[in-house]
Amino acid sequence: MSFTIPSNELITDALGDISQLPDDMKMAVTNRIEKSFKPIPRPRNGDWLAQYEESGQTMKSFQINLSKAVPHGTHNTIYIQPIGSFDHPRAPPVDVINEFARAFFSGCEVELLPTVDFTNNMKKRDRDGQPQYLTGDIHHYLCQTRSKRDSRRELLCVAVTMADIYPEEDWNFVYGQACFVEHVGVYSFARLDPLFYRATAEEIHRTPLTEQHSIIILRRCIKIILHEVGHIFGLYHCIYYLCLMNGFNNETEMDWKPLHLCPVCLHKLYSTLQFDIRHLYATFANLCDTYGLEKECKWYRKRLEYLQ
Image (cartoon, rainbow, N blue to C red):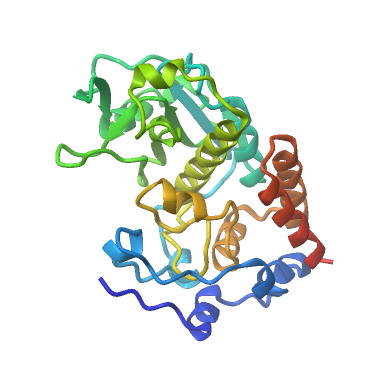
């Protein structure tokens, strides 16, 4: 499948009308762009854009997407629901991931719910000796249990799990899947450990977690949840720059995808959440600094300088 790298004219059209943006946001989507945002590279064999046709989502097409989540009235809370055990020596810290989501989706409340078990109604199959759960049944569970959460506050609810998941019988796996109409989703951290494809489940469990692997796992988990919640907010896969919303087929693609939105996607999310961009960038940079995401901290702080 042939992918054509978008021209500057197409990118400008996708960005849309920015004349009514506050000065800070206008700077965020126009100033020193070439210094902060890398062009999307030509896809290699096996890359997402080599296998799937993506036409790109302009600001205009985003605005007419009626299924996207939009805070309204008291409904501005993102619930994160852990499912299944996280009692694993290499499990990511879900409370830290929650902090990053709260900073990124500034303007929304983000609340981490108590962990629940998988139910007997959730279909599973065996995959290399480990259970793999059907995403649709988890979506159904999140919808069925909405009354147990604060439905007056809920905007969307996403499940996270250490178990592997799949969307259909003929799929091997999926990192995550959302149900856009119901504003729910489920995301698996199972395959984000660098050892996943190199060792058995038992060997992984016995292997001490190094600082290097801890940071890789944390970075990947944050990317997964921000990317997938971004979809529920109506953002399609990005084709304009290297961006958090780029599609990806594997961990290699995931790793070179940045932990920030490009100008086009940032404009879309801002139109929904109306955040203070300086506050968002500063808070996110501080979290990156605290938890060892050095290159991301450097990017956000440099971007803040360009907003002066």
